[in-house]
Image 1 (tube, rainbow, N blue to C red):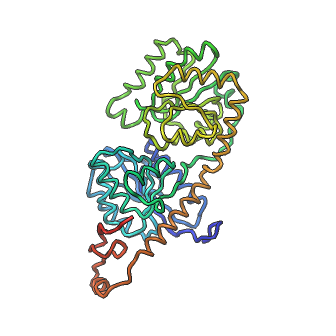
Image 2 (cartoon, rainbow, N blue to C red; image 1 turned 90 degrees about the horizontal axis):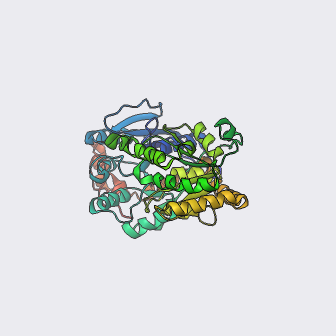
Image 3 (cartoon, rainbow, N blue to C red; image 1 turned 180 degrees about the vertical axis):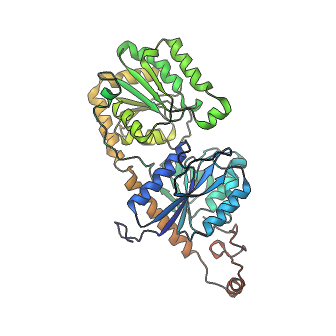
Amino acid sequence: MKMNNGPVALRRLGMLGNHTPRQCGIATFTADLNHALTARYPGTDCFVAAMNDGGKNYAYPTLVRTQIAQDDLSSYKRAAAFLNGQDLDALSIQHEYGIYGGTAGSHLLTLMRDLRMPVVTTLHTVLGEPNEQQWTVMDEVLRRSDRVVVMSSHGAGLLTKVHGVSPRKIDLIPHGIPSVPLDGRSKDRLGLAGRPVILTFGLLAPDKGIEYALEAMPAILKEFPETVYLVVGATHPHVRAEHGETYRLMLESLVHRLGIGANVHFHNRFVTLDELTEFLAAADLYITPYLNAQQITSGTLAYAVGSGKAVLSTPYLYAQELLAQGRGVLVPYRDPVAIAQEVTGLLADEPRRLAMSRRAADLGRSMVWPAVAQSYMASFIRARAEFHTALPAPSWQNRLQNSVGLLLDPARGGAALGGLRSDGKVY
C-alpha cells in the first residue's frame, strides 16, 4: 500500500496507552490518533492495548483488543506476550507519568523488556529536572524505543540535554487537532449572543490556575460588563478520587465571594467533540492560566490555536512555543492584574484580536489529524527500517537455538532468551 509521498504504509500497528471512554487527555489522544491513522491508511490494521486504572472496567470499542491493569505487574507480562503474537510492524507507546504502575511508571519497563518489534514512544511530558527514579526509568524507556516523538522543540531539547538522546532519534510531531468548521451561530445557540466570551476547557485540577482568571474578572467587567467566562470540563478523575471536588468548590466559592456569578458559567462534564466545537466557536478569547512552567504539551491549547482563537496564556514551555510570532499573548503566572489588562486590551482591539486569530489558524493547518497521522506513519516506517537494519547476520548459535525453539532476540544484541531485550541497545 502506497502513501501519498511514496513510502509503503505498514500492515499492522499496535498502540499502547489510555483509551476512551476513560476520561483523560491521553485517552482522547490515543483514540484520535488511532482514528486518524485508520482513516488516512484504511489498509493498515491499527489496534489498542488499553491501560486501566484503579481496577476499573471500561466499555471499550472493539479496536481495544487487550487491557492492562495499571498496578498488576503480571498484566504487563501478559500484554507483552499478546503483542509479540500479533506480528506488528511497529508499536506506538503513549508515555505520561501516572498512567503506568510502579515507581515513576517502572511497570512499563517489564513490558518493554519483552517486546520483539520496533517501538515508537510519544512523550507527553519531559521533565527538565527529574528525580533519580524518574531519570532512571525514563532513560531505559528511551533506550528501548527505536524512535521518540515529542510535540515541541523544547521537549526535544530536554531529551538531548537531560538524557543525551541523539536528535536523529527524535521526531517532532505536533499535537493533532480535529478539522472541524466553526459555526458563527454558536453564541446564539448557547444564549450568549452579543456578549464577549472567554473560554477555558479541560479536566480541572489545581495546577490549571483558573482562580487567577476568576480574580481578573471584576476588572474585566468594569470595561466589558457583559463578558462571560466559560469554564468547561469535569474534575480530573485522579484529582476527584483523591480530593473529591475540593478544587471546583473553591472556584465556585471564589465566584460567589467576588460577586461574578452571573458572568461565570461552569460546565461540569467531559464534553463531546461536537460540544467542544460549539464552545470554541462561541469564544472570542481562549485562556490557559496554567501554573506548571515545565509543561511541554497541552491538547487544549493545541485545539484553541488550531481553531483560530485569540489566546492568552501563562508562559509554560508549550505556550511559549505555540504562541510565538504573534499567535497569542503571554502573561506572568498568578497575576490577575496582567490577565485583566490583556483581556480588556484584546476585547477593545478587534483588528489585533482577529489578526492574532488568523496567525493561529495558519499554524493550525499543519496540526490537523490527517497531517499528523502521515507524520506518525513516517516515524513508524523509520523505526521499522532502523530496527531491521540493526539486526546482525544470524550466527550458528542463533540457528541452533532457533531449531530447538529458543529464540534469541538479535534486534537487541542477541543476548537474551525467550525474546527478552538485552541492555545493549544504544542511542
